[in-house]
Image (cartoon, rainbow over the protein chains, first blue to last red):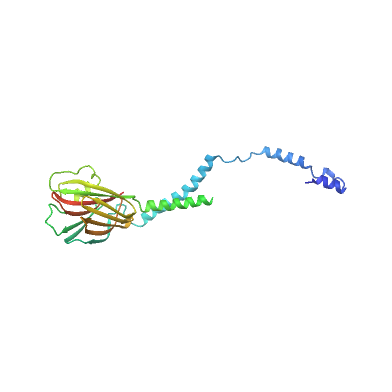
Length: 124
Length: 136
């Protein structure tokens, strides 16, 4: 690629006052000298890259966990809710069925009085 | 960065699932409740309070135990004479109890972590069979 000075020289144009555009080599030499005077950004280290990825993945993770916790709290459901029975079908022959819920232990008991000889114990 | 966003989205979904529907397995224990003897043996310490406070027996003996991962995909476990079939997630777990091929009961429950679900079986020589379900 021809420089501006060469083009002017070939065209027979008079040298502009003040020296005109500088030669290519001179321009780049000055450019590099100026560039050396300013600190250049170094390529990120692998550790930094890994940390950035972890942060990118961790932020939504934390947000999602917070959202889930908030939904749980706002739902009004007690944290120590007992087992919920959605349906119950006692298939075998029986006389009675009791469903007990113990608030202290959070346990739920299904007690069936089967058609069989009396048991040694029973639900309280 | 597309991969990063996808990973983050997957992690978020996983977190929601893990925190909203916690509990990765349900343990099933067959317990012999008896009017003879006293105390609860090892293997029942985490449910001893619930059993002792609600059932009128003097002693409890662990006969068999099994674990079903949740959500359960038609998992059948044999515990002594009993067969327990579990289907579905922890919040809507279908449980079917059979004894020697005879269906006893079928229920759908919303198990809570650390909260026992107790179903009595039939009478045995010493007292009563009891099935204890506990999600963790």
